[in-house]
Image (cartoon, rainbow, N blue to C red):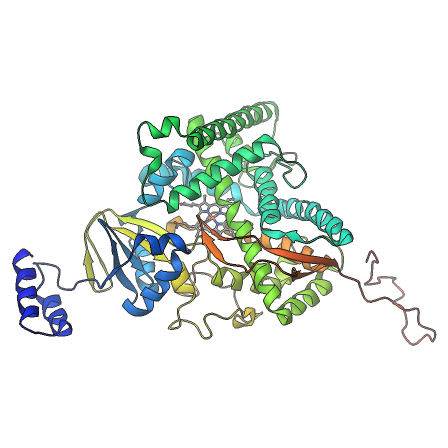
Length: 520
Ligand code: HEM
């Protein structure tokens, strides 16, 4: 390679155009590497200032579906090609680990299901997936409804007082309340109270996000990590959350010991349908550290993702009043003013499309991280073991080569009577929940959770961007956040009044099944 690069720079000095040299040297590169991956140079500051996946989109349009991004001593492969994404995530998933992600998240998730690799991952995935069975997910619909109802009460108060509301933080609390109950039967009730444990969860989360966008691992600097006030606070918060989880595990163990329910495939304790309860009742033979890592992983995985989906869905709807009224029409028709049930999940078709489309424009997380464990070939390019790879779901989902009107929010792009879009039927141009063996275990859960929340909220309220609200800009941690919140004004929806008819033109159905149940 040394000789070749000298030769190249010599030829370049002699006036050979770069394009010609590119073609020439792509063919005669060292030994096996017949082709060289296009290379882009970035600056760290550019990546830090803005949501980092936005400049990557520009580079994708210039360099294509796979390119190398080098800054300083570091470099990453950026993948935005459906076939290559499919190869990494599905066809050769065994050849890739979570790499950088596992390193960053170790302090909070340990060997939990998201960062874990190899045998640990295989065993844990097998234990956890059965816990999210159909009956469990159906039971969760009530929980979603109750939590959204609590949020509605908050919004109701704001609507009465004419106060604007910051929806991003409210959604974060909504999904925290949901996931605490759903995973380990703990009621954070963060929509009502600001307890120490809620604050601790947020401290830990913010730290995980800071670490995932930090160019240097400041938390590994020997003395710093012990004396920095911020690190001290993080460690205290982490201890608080870990102790709480250990406590919940032992409470649940006692419950399981005392119950005489037979364990079976769709086992569920009605009092405590949580994933933790299922795992303990299944006789899941695992260390309490591993169990805690998995609970913490699901807490984080299922909290900020769903919150971000709700935030961006309401943002998109506020820009597209036509979609909002179509949505409200469907919800009025399907739900009236009752709470959603599991049967409604297939009836709320347009609501589902709104969520599908929100996940296309704002995928959470916007990039998937992998590291190659062996040499491999990506597209036409050979790569070596140890490459750090970012699969940009953002680029896939917004590619002008893969979508009509890629940047436009258009729930109608998927027919209502067609299949729900997923990575398989969209051939890896659409990956809202990843794909292959590492696909999200909470995809149905999260889809229903967001459908219930969106449906109940738009049924009860009208939402608009608040007057003088800060412009909504993006920033990243693990998911896409707004920089200054999503400030909205909410008003209660007034149902069209039902006038008593003077003439008996409309006969009332003798069975008495009126479609209106009042309660405007
Ligand atoms: C994995 C998205 C909600 C638990 C993933 C992945 C994505 C994703 C893209 C793949 C990551 C990768 O391949 O690197 C989402 C979105 C959600 C959501 C957009 C909400 C709308 C949830 C919920 C739970 C959950 C509610 C828990 C109940 C997990 C777990 C994994 C995962 C455990 C790791 C699976 C494995 O590696 O085997 N999620 N998720 N997620 N998700 Fe979700």
